[in-house]
Image 1: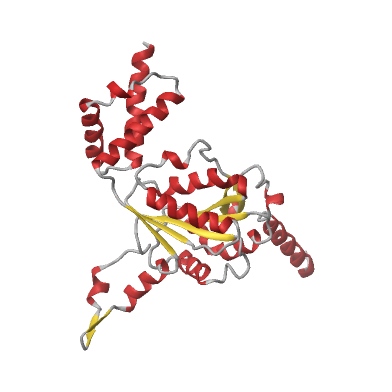
Image 2: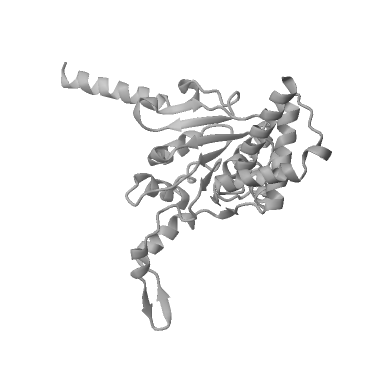
Length: 298
């Protein structure tokens, strides 16, 4: 094979790889699939249809009314072309961060909202993704779920650059929503705090601490999630019990079922898991409704 043939073969291979980024070439129809995965590495690069819980509604998310209202407002601004912020949803595990984003998609998919989920390794190509999405007739939320970086992670700098504006110079129809258990997305070490110094009466943080804060600072809106108080947790448990019972055609009388014994079981379940959260409440509800269903059918 001559050098020219090699160059042509390489160019053709590159063109085929780039073509996979386009929905009509990658096999994903955004009109039919409101949520997709995007991969930027390996043989699976491009768009892939993602399964979404179409039944999850905003009303299913209890105990996070403030966070729900703020994110819904930001999303509605974005959908009509008004200024809106990139959002960091951070806090305790299982408190509804990811579910809130998915419920918003269900609420606004008919208005043109689409969700593109990007995993941490694929963030290195987020600028390329932005250029592809800019050409499409939808409003996209690029969703980074359970985000956390190590110090030498290449995706960290790529996301930081996108949030600084390089992505949005090409795509004003794209926002970034990220969830994390860490407010600053990077591990924090005692040695970094020890490098802080006093200048006169002022405390100056070390450069390492400033770098950790710099990424999360680029999200215009922070929404914090905390473990539920016991009363709120029990309200969520009861909601999911009734929701699941109705779905499976089981009879549950709320007036008699949710007694002190029921509450004690739900609280003991949360203690065993180490957190009162929406996820814990849903898991308990599945267990309780499942047992009731077996008893009613036996």
